[in-house]
Amino acid sequence: MFLLNLLIVFSSGAEEYHLSEASQKQDGIPHGEVTLHEWKSEVFKGTLRQYYLYIPAQYDGSEAANVVVFQDGHAYVDEKGLIRVPNVFDHLHAHQEIPLTIGIFINPGLFTDKIEGRQGWGNKKGSNRSVEYDSLNSNYAQFLEKEILPEVAKAYKLAQDPARRTICGMSSGGICAFTVAWERPDLFGNVISHIGSFTNIRGGHVYPALIRKEEKRNIRVFLQDGEHDLDNQHGNWWLSNLQMEKALAFRQYDYKFVGGTGGHDGKHGGQIFPDTMRWIWPKK
Image (cartoon, rainbow, N blue to C red; front, side, top):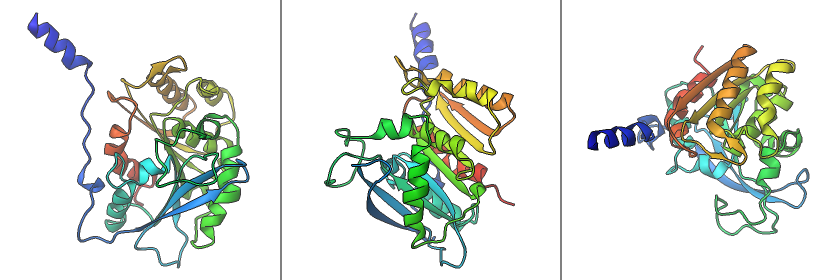
């Protein structure tokens, strides 16, 4: 009986995910600069948000840089968090494993006139996150095209080719990333979705059917999810991501799906993020 119980516990548990050297802060390599900014939006009127910029040490303004935009930017930019993008970008740049890349880490809008401290997961009061991320329309793409990208481009040269632009997010930020590329493949040609919410929060469960029936978009898609992801009134996240994978395969999209046993967090996505970026922009 004890052995049976042990087997049940073992089989139902999620894997442990650990960050590799590529995600750690490293001495002896150039480090990019991370700066914090605020933005008051016109597309999402009445909202204020913080966003971060990562500029690689190798950037000198002589050439346009590739771009990765992150939703819930605070979670991706944190050098002690689960993803640690600045560390990963430093490593990949130092070893010439990705092209010159600027990171834009955007937080969801808040209906406020002032943000105290650093915006994070705790800023739920007055948040416009679900409207911005879960809605199946082009509003967020318009926000990036008309507001954030031009603002960053005032100081830095950004690649215009959608194949050199990637949009990334987790949970509702993951479906947001897909929606932006789906609506505007001329703006972003690559998607990274961690534990994406392709469920019925605001109708996102229809994407597998749309992928199968609608015109094929010129986009590449990276999906990550785990068997212990959420299961609630909006849907089952794991099954929804499996349906996305099957639909992308049916239409012969250029995609990669990495499944695991994790839950609704960034642990697995963080572990594989260096390899994810290597897949997005492989060495030529």
